[in-house]
Length: 425
Image (tube, rainbow, N blue to C red):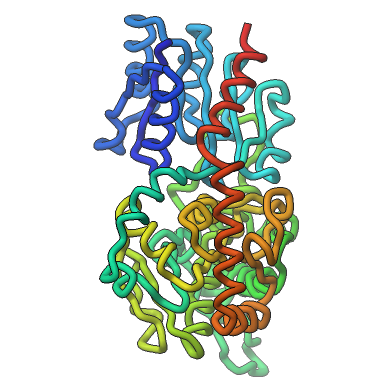
């Protein structure tokens, strides 16, 4: 059996290709988008069409959802299988999601609950996984120098989202604090500035509302307040202030509320949360940060910035050598477990992660990993587990054993193929 894997260089791709190959599947790859990110939907459709007219492809696979691939596969009556690893995925609002030959797998149950009604017989929930065998090959060859180099009391590997935050790039009216006079109310200068601008921008009201909403959400874990809290004015201002806001004629509904909540405010929230958390922990503990983001905003307070880490050669060493691995799930991932959770556990690392509603479905908190639901709880638990090495190591071992046995790519892909076989004529 031959399948076509449409690649764009996602870090999950090599592991999934390996599993398909181990299952006896011949994996053909379309790699144009790995080097050219400007490929248009029309060009993508042409690439897939060429493959489907020249070879007997059993199905086309991709990480995340591509409407152009879906439409092309639907035309040729070839299954299109995709697995989301991100949230949000704006393309899920495309009418292509309704196509008969789709088999769409979503990793976040909240994401699944939101979109499954569009095509209920062809959209499925499937959590992410890890390649414990790959990590084992790296970890077993670690040297004393590796443990010294990559060890730390607390390590965090990931983006600060300062460079990815679209909200921060939006034009905005400055905050005004002029005193009120008898002839000119305090808000007059603000109104004049807002009305004078010919470019759509964020009003002081919207800026203040978003700031307040972020502060509220930072205090709540396991429940996303943002989307349901947004007034129409805030949604419209943010959407209209970005000339590159995702909008398409090919949608089945209004995506503005969802995208503003997740792609704009959610990303800003991630940046604020990560910076504040690292700064707070850095005041009390040895914290190592591996990031390609600009770390200057952190200053010099207790955070050892070590630059980026290679996913396949360095990241597993960090996870295994660190006493505590911190995970801060982006709030747009509302209930699900990010890839970082599976990978830390698959490397035998001790994981401290923010609470997510799906964690108890797969792991026992306090036995396989640890969670926190406030900054105070995080600080308290970090201090506790740094002082209780035997308990910490035992939890890391339990988390590894459960993950290596029940949450591998082999098991997930096997489930995916089972569903594909049961639902394809």
